[in-house]
Image (cartoon, rainbow, N blue to C red; front, side, top):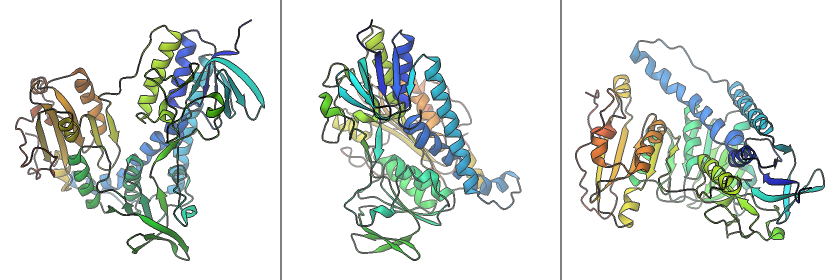
Length: 473
């Protein structure tokens, strides 16, 4: 008779928890997972997947507007929001069923229940009102959006959880925030025909990204009709007979039909039993873990957004792989957080990997900067004034490419490939020695030759002026 019911019990069936559970089972562990909602987690159910589908949907008006330049006669376009909304939800349900099926095929026992920590080896299943034990417990419950309760009328606002389920699409929307979610939904709603205002308390949206990318994205968003107000705080939200009124601290008001708060997410540890089990949390409520995702309790581990390290779905998946290898395959493995590529599916999208110019300088690198901005063949031919931007941050001493930053069509696809080169430590000379694929926008990565010389090299400067429209010849 074994000492515990399972070798691994996972709380949370999101991307990271599912990957860790399935891989552990492949290594011979007896596994189980508890999920109080549906398998799939934030990414599948209320994040990456449905959001990207809405990004695709919102891009069609521009495609159709450009169609006549390419000889197509386009008729009047109308959006059937309920049809789109329900189709997106049907897709998330389909993917959730696949997650459940794959867990079952791996041999995992699935509990449709809320699980809380009871002690270092015990979890309590709330609905079933029973305890189960495990040699190792994995917490992978993710994070949850929050609304600032100090704002009067905050009950009239919604979070990114509810945005996917709107009964009707509003005519006007105010989005509060300046990160991934806020910027992406500003583009989505604008593309779907909503009058969008984005409010951000800071001086530049997308904190932590390269300043050139941030500044250029603001220009492109504004050109699409999105109104962006920086260094702006909401004082109150009032419900009126005409909709909602957002009162700003500077005492001006914005009339709107919807207020979306996207000001951050918090690790979902409240009521999880961490204190009872002896698991230490940081000030933000995140589970404190070591390089191998072990908490302050040797038998309890945590991965993904609940640890508040690098909150990206692929990172959570990789953390899950590392944990399974460490616990059940005798291969201690720590996640390497350097040079993780990421994309923001703004409109236009951006992709980035490695160090920003400011980060490179702060780290003591003497850097060479290569950058270019231009209209692509596609946009130039259609007469659309939208620009593509590429930037390479290069160590002047070693010639290694420290960072790659892209803004424009398919930036996310490009940065995935560029991320391999940056992760491998490729040099600018190796980029230059790579033959270009012509005609593409991506060929700029291997054809940029002239260094950019700012007036003051200590700080990042505003973007260089746009080059004339080019045909990639």
